[in-house]
Image (cartoon, rainbow, N blue to C red; front, side):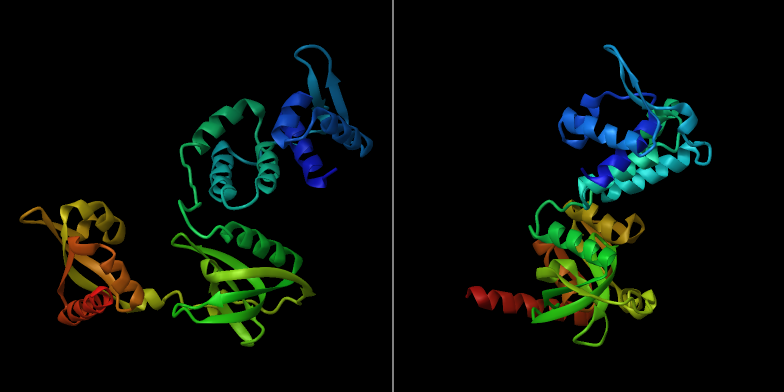
Length: 309
């Protein structure tokens, strides 16, 4: 018998007038017999359970036991549901299901259809089309380690492909431009570090606990590095890349040119990531200026060509 399931059932009963055991069983992927045992446990805990016999019967809670639902507006609940939906594809269904059940109890039942319709107007799916099969497992294990204050050990590959073994106190998970990062205290380096989850392998949670250190987000990573190092370069690209260019620099930086081409003012960082991004556009993109960026691209293209010659 899982406490999380019992709490979720109570939340659902607070939300609805009544619900059948078979519907609860389907919702939590257990048998009706398990639901009846859960209901018995909830009743023994002092929650006033009511049963409604007949074809349209079900299980409910006395109205006098239910909380006042006027504290949140319909818009408040819709916003909360949208936020939960954005992480439902990343964290476990069971964890989210219980939270959703609790949130829905904050509004009267007659408003729920309207709220669900509004919350469904925005759908956020953070799961990648393809990628590291262990990524979601690593994410869940990291979250569990943070909750339990347990130390993580893993192999890490830096941006240059250099492998190292790390022992880390996990403090925070960050989603940045569709990439997840772990911010934690690296015991071997004796300092806070930022780790990209996609570069982590063989992650394990060990039984060794840690005492929370003073945690300051600003001390963990220089996210302003990108803003400080962006320069604008001039690109000549094929019309077929318009959508991608809009994503990177906005419509205001795009001008129509002759021969089905576009002139682009493109935000660029002079590092491997920036050059790899431009090279990823293939022969549909040409850097016009500045000359040093253009020359570096030519050099990298020649080096690639040497591999195949």
